[in-house]
Image 1 (cartoon, rainbow, N blue to C red):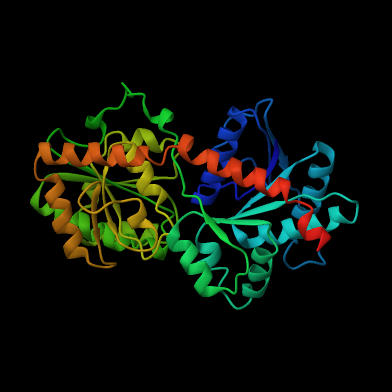
Image 2 (image 1 turned 90 degrees about the vertical axis):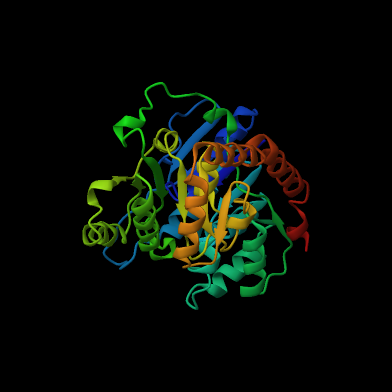
Amino acid sequence: MKVAIVCYPTFGGSGVVATELGIALAQRGHEVHFVTYKQPVRLDLLSKNIHFHEVHVPEYPLFHYQPYELALSSKLVDTIKIFGIDVLHVHYAIPHAYAGYMAKKMLEEEGIFIPMITTLHGTDITLVGNHPFYKPAVNFSINKSDIVTSVSESLKKDTLELFDITREITVIPNFIDKSKYTQEFTECQRSMMAEEDERIITHISNFRKVKRVPDVIHIFYEIQRQIPAKLVMVGEGPEKEKAELLCERLDITDKVIFLGNSNEIDRILCFSDLFLLPSETESFGLAALEAMINKVAVISSNAGGIPEVNKHGVSGYLSEVGDVEDMVTNALKILKDDKTLEGFKQRAFDLACTFDIHNILPMYEEVYKKAYKERFKDALN
């Protein structure tokens, strides 16, 4: 099957999931075409089954904001016609589902009926999509999709509560490729980050307010007061500078390492003991899943879809949003001795394996087949 995938090509969860999905589809023999404004960060190599089509947005003085949706929908029309695409899969409602629908309608004028699958990832629904300026267009685009999927039961529930949805929403969880994490990195030296007796704690995010980065710092501050530890902070975003200043105020700068964005998350996690995810909300918790597949225990909030990934008392612990004290208590339970820590690490890995892409990919393939079989239905109506 020939699949066109539209996504954001950045470090965000939706772009990562879309890219990994496309790579896996190509490995299964499907022909995959990524359509976006730059090559996705996780798309290292193109192959005979993977193609990238860049969306160019010409700059005109007439426009205060350049019309990316218009350029994207036009590029989709050209790509679908030239390469005979069978299904269109858009990730993130804004602006991809809207542009995809416009491409569908333009193609129908030429007798080409392309089914569109829209995958909802989180903030496209709960934050941006729910804004009064965008809500009508998002609602319309979702309902005009041929099939709608969400990455968690929590996100499906939020979508149905926030919007007037007439389409059925199928939950297909995010995934991990277990085969990519079986290699032990011989160059992975804990001593580069910490002393032999120190626990290594990690946080990875886009450093937005919703991630509650100050909570990460405060949790670590209390941990390091009781046991030797180092904190590794990975990512870039608006809250990063504030986090650095907070570390200075708490006099723990020498115990906190800020690494910025990285394409080597697995190398960072391979020597981590504990992952902190105290977010205000998460549609799924992909960062936690990536930690778990690397045998890292997780301390998290119980917000959104996180409880669908991190199981309380199994792979780590869940606490109420903002309950730093409880998170500290739970963290110390895990870190108190090597035997307890190793038990949580192994269980985290075992649980993460249930989200292996080989378990999830067939769900998407079934969705594609269903959409392709029913591609004429809406046009006839």
